[in-house]
Length: 210
Image (tube, rainbow, N blue to C red; front, top):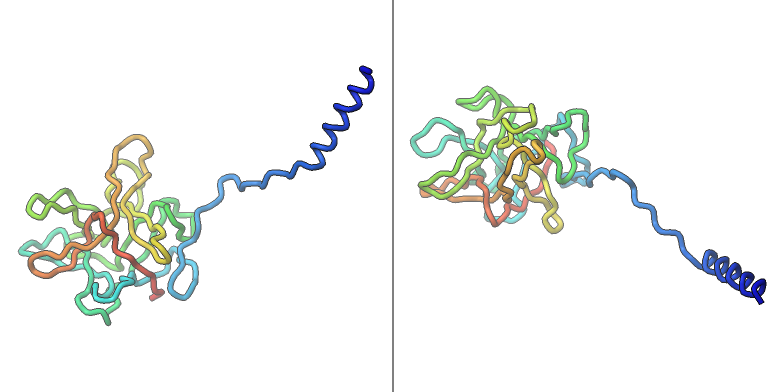
């Protein structure tokens, strides 16, 4: 009887092993999805792109200019005219060895050439503006050197439906600092400038190779 019981257990185990399906393998450390331009091509470092609003009626591409009565910092904003693509920009990953721009990765965003009051026109989130209750995007950032000292200079691209949005949620200083994670949207000031600022309503964007 013992031999019959043992044989039954062995047979049951073999049948279970044959019936069991192998678990699908998950790639360890898989890279995030690459960002694509309007032609379906992968965004790459060292290449210039126009950032354009997807929805019509929002304005043209992204540019920079002085607003109000101040000369610094220079604000990032949308062109007034939809037919204008704005100024081209580069995306520079925190890891400069990466040649492909991917979702959810820390990036510097940079206009070509200097702004009026900065050596390089790198995007930065400015401090809270009490007059407007906004945190605007300027061109007074510093390129590279990821860490707590440059945390305000890092942005990310995320999927937003079938398109994309820009996000401020840097991870360049890990647990060493606390950051406010927000989408990048548009604030129309009293002079009519469509300024980029941290927002609960993201600007839906697309990318066009310059």
